[in-house]
Amino acid sequence: MAGIGVKLNKIFQKNSIVANLVGFTYSTVATVAPMFVIILVILLMGWVLGFSTVGYLNRELFSCTVLYMFIFSLLTASPFNSVLSKYMSDVIYEERYEDILPCYYLGLTMNLSLSCLLGIPFCLWEHFVGGVKVFYVFTGFCGYISLVLVFYSMIYMSICKDYEKISLFFIIGMLVTFIFSLILRYYFRWSITESMLFALVTGIFLIAVLEFSFVRRYFRRNSNQYAKVLKYFIKYWQLVVTNFLYIAGLYIHNFVFWNTDMKMIVVDTFVCNQPYDMASCLAMFTNISATIIFIAHVEMHFHEKYKAYSESVIGAKKADIENDKRQMFRQMGNSLMTLARIQFIITVVVYLLCIILLPLFGFSGLVMSIYPCLAAGYFILFMMYSAILFLYYFNDMSGMVLATLSFFSVTFAVSIYATRLDEIWYGIGVVCGSFVGWTVTYMRLRWIERNIDRHIFCNGKLLKRGKGEKPSSKVYDRRSNEKIIKENI
Image (cartoon, rainbow, N blue to C red; front, side, top):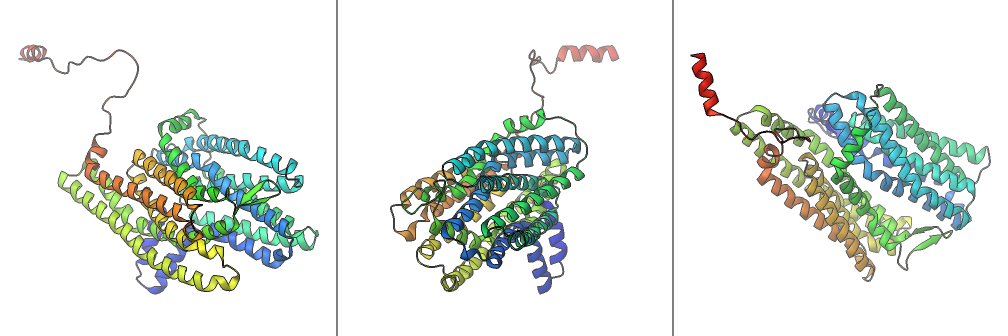
């Protein structure tokens, strides 16, 4: 994300209200705009095509298909993203650009293999047990695979600092989606749900093609060194565990409530819990601005301090290293506190607006009873994730695994217990899990602050490891040295 900070600094240097608005808009476009564009187009298609007039079963089948496409494409991509991102960063730093395409192809093969391994049996079950038409099932599967491709290629585009291109591709794809849905519905006379689903899948596939062509145009040489990528998965297995546990923790509480008496089963295949899922979505959007604020603040301030400390470690005096270290950790604390203060204000305002306005649009009853606890939980969750990103900066693999494992385990266990409580406490699993994950992450950051000298200077190796005879332990021979001196005299 280091490319965002430079542009944001240029924007905010003007110190005006317009500049602040432009900076916030740019941060939004570079971070969460793709998600908002997809949601907006789906809502717009539903309004224009008359989705509310569709029968209940077809509406729920479409909603569950789209829900499963997004959730499980994120889950199947999660084991690979962090390691491949780490490999890409190291390759670019070492200027071995010819090793990027092997990473892209191998990661793509592994990602698609896992996705198909999970997706194909589900689609067969959906058709033979649920009785859903082959065309509808295959369209949903294509959308699922296309989303896998989209999320995967976004890693490479993000590392290349082309955030604007990502948002542009999503805008193009969703514009095509909306226009194509109108053509399918009013020219070819397709049904409403089939028009919406096929058009959405077409737009997502177009985004995947645009991202793939961009990556291929950006990186042209191929070293065919695939073994190096596989070694990274062994060396940095903690990154695989960390990212998977975090993504799984985001949805594990939903999965728990999918297995309660509140669950709804569609065509003997899809399982969901509409009130809880809707409350989770509202809670996430209530706190989504934390991502924008954190990225903007870190890119503009912390990254500069981190870079200064890294450069001083290479060759500066001890006093300069200590000074840069203090400034770096002070800035890290300021970033977290600023994020907490600003996001708390935003969350309270958005929460009050939701409580007042959403009942006017039909959101009431059980949804609004579950929403408050989940809103508090997602506030802590985004704070926890921001702190975990600092662990990434300091390469604390053990701390990341411990934090995400704590988050996942506590969220899962407390959510099971919460199914026995009153509906207002259904989201307590997210609150407890996020709080425990935040506490562990904070303790690890404090540990790094106390032990960073050992963490930085004592992890290197003077000799390269290898197999063979052990070298002699003798490093100096006094008699031989005296003999050489006498001969020179």
